[in-house]
Image (tube, rainbow, N blue to C red; front, side):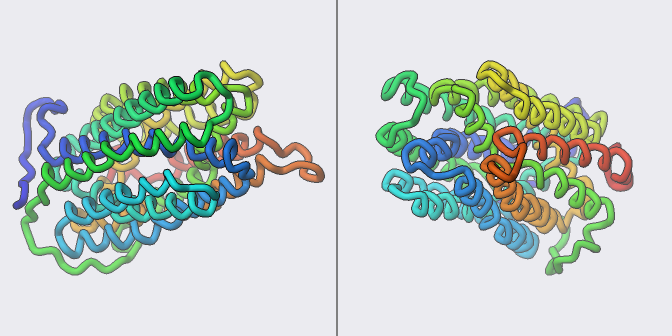
Length: 414
């Protein structure tokens, strides 16, 4: 079955969003309950239980995203070729769900890395078709609202998952600074049910969108996607090189004395801000333009990262991480909406695959650089926990400046 996009002349609201957007939203809600219960404490498990160095943690996180990158590109291209997005997305979510139980048995960083990478393969399969399905299902006038709503549902799930994890940590080990193995295993077990509910939500609730004409076999070509999209990719690449894994923010919080339960509650508050900001920010981008929201979000990001570099007390990290939700709410969903603004409709899947692949490929050097900067000592004078945040904040400022002076207005809202 297929779903047809309908034009609407009334003021858009989330109640008017089509079934596909709601189905994708609930899938992300359930999957993020599962993922956020586990993913945010993996760096703590690696550091506290297995005694892994930050350079190895950076390597794991970097390869995890890089593993998914080529698949993001291929799955997006394939969804354009097939003219269908749903079942590729379902397959990707399904793979991530079936790999999660293996975290329970992890007793070495190599096994953690293997499961993490398998999970990211699932993300690589699903991300581009899922985003293209959302873009296919709405009009240009409601694109920002749809992606903002999707981010809000995704983040609301993350918040619920973190609350569940925080309750488990509190009951199992109270306010201990380090995470225990048994607590980690309990959280993994309870994360399995929402993961499979997420897969079911998409399989049952979504339908591929009807197209007006038969899709030609797409040929991957950056030239075919247009100059504005290529410039956007270059600017995003500069920003992403300094956007290391959030694992380093978690480690920085622990470095300044925040306990495991404190970190989880901090992340809950961050996701609350992210959830509250995403939908109105997406709707605002439909009215005033994507670029302004993205530039504003990147400037907030730079200020936060500089703050992380200078922070000396735990309460400062808490405040900064909560405000970090403002950056995500402003820029993340808005950037996804901009991709659809910049490319022809029949290349959306390929464009989302390319965009996500670039981000994924750069996640490896960005996280590896962050790990090395953090760990630097001895002859590397001045390196340490502050260094990766100074690096990331500086690149965010450069990217924001380039977005203002270099990003053309053609094919997008200013």
